Image (cartoon, rainbow, N blue to C red; front, top):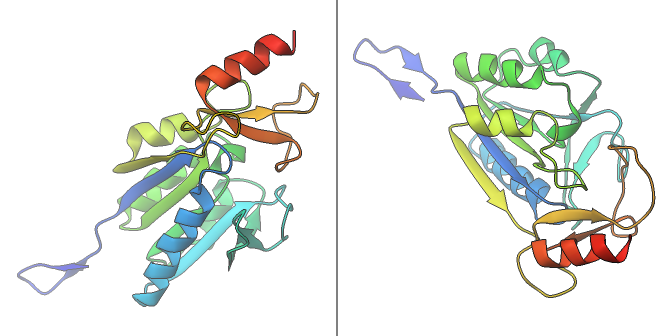
Length: 193
């Protein structure tokens, strides 16, 4: 918080995006930032898409099993309804939300709220995913994190889907997806033809 000469307090709002492939530590970083905000006695609310029940219905859980309580929601508009008198809003798996999430994050930041968003920047085909590209464009800070390619050890580029299916959204883990660098991803695509 910043106090001006008249003694009024102003909270500078901002949008922070943590993006990358699966298994890159996005949720881990989100949880770390939210725990620090709680430690600083800030009022924190965390949201996740209701469809993501992989580890827990109510917690945001990283692949390393770190967890923090959250509120599962069906649409981005619910975030505004549930976030009055909050200092920090965390949003996990943002790629699964509707495009209205961009306006929601902007409105919260304009109100003085720190908004921390984590999500996949690309789908399994290497195509920009959901509202993440637009959020990156309006964010005050973007951190792209990388997994390690399971084939060669380079920095991963994409979450390669190992199972068949054309649906863009398929919740999964290591059985369904693997992080691959660009070269290994191209080789995997060529081998599947």
